[in-house]
Length: 511
Ligand SMILES: [Zn+2]
Ligand SMILES: [Zn+2]
Ligand SMILES: [Zn+2]
Ligand SMILES: [Zn+2]
Ligand SMILES: [Zn+2]
Ligand SMILES: [Zn+2]
Image 1 (tube, rainbow, N blue to C red):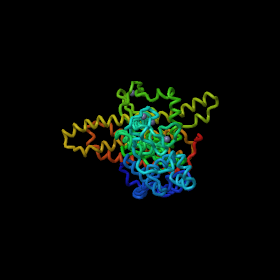
Image 2: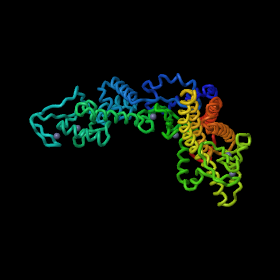
Image 3: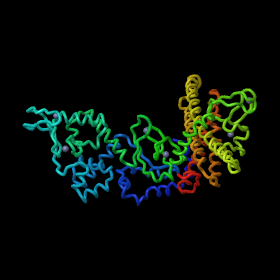
Image 4: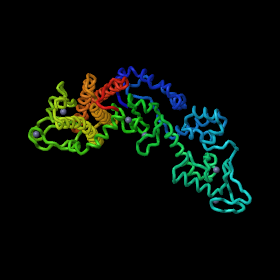
């Protein structure tokens, strides 16, 4: 985790934030998860005191946790309704795990509820296969004397081979589990897990269980799968879709992947999901216009020789004439890192003064390009910083064998690299956010925070690009700058999240 424990004070309002989320009385009718979370929140209190304004409560669930959770709810409903667990499971899946509504509906109309869920009203004990004299299977027309057959409570009987074949087809080919119906014509009875266990092979049972777990997570609003490739974890978070105007719920999976619980895209704080969607759409639509910007070579503004960027840092020095300039705005570097720093701010003047349609559209394009440029540049720089780290890591390994540095002692570079990635990710989204902000005094504060974070990041990034030989001596400096970057990020995100929560941001679009 980040080493910013000493900046917890900015999170002073974590408690009233919790208050906003917890008391959703009006929705109790349609959200089952609200009053019953199967113990998900047991250890919530351990963390809630240290939570920052932009952080949300969440819990990571392994496949075993999900299954355990599922069974807990099934057994509970089973004991309340006095129905066998496998039937309660069908009821719960039918009712999309809306426990309260289900119990209510069952109490009012037990037979109708069972009927609709695809269950009969007659609950026999253990299902078993039978040899029925004189039976002919309707599917394969076999009628042998020792033919094993099976029927659920609906009485539609088929030979075991046909039944098995049918279930294998449903589970393996069609990926169905929770709502497989009886093979009988027009019969809506759901095949329960006991019948299924009796009939199918073990590998299919595993697949069936996996599919059931899928539907459990898919059916619950408070659960989402981690979008990282091949990750089997799910995250439990109680932020609702309608709260996404006021919260950007970033969660971190057990696999370390940070993602937004609202839209499952990569972490995009401080921008709310809706704005992210609009921004990405705009970038896609305008990609032709914007593409030439993010090229990796530019000309020195003084002597016009070609300069290539190979690290994330924006401080460029021309090899030929030694002119120092900013990669982003092509302005003098000497003004960056001082109170003159104005690289992140867009001067709106030209737009207001534009008289003709053409001048206006030019001004609006310039405005977009200002934000897009910086957005794309941080994305690109994060990649370059990472490449640089990987190269450096290799060199450090060899340096390690030559010098006295231990593996632990070179870890500060990894910490710095991670801080750079994370801060640039944040900075990137501050530009999408700023693009949609209407100008007022809050915007100025936001831009100051953005500027401070950007200056901190550029300064760390610059140090990061020093020759490997110098890095060992810069350890203390790099550690300091890393901590400072993390601190600036916490301040920016806390401030933005507070304002979003309080609904005080003004935007130039409806969303
Ligand atoms: Zn058959
Ligand atoms: Zn049937
Ligand atoms: Zn994951
Ligand atoms: Zn999102
Ligand atoms: Zn030059
Ligand atoms: Zn600049």
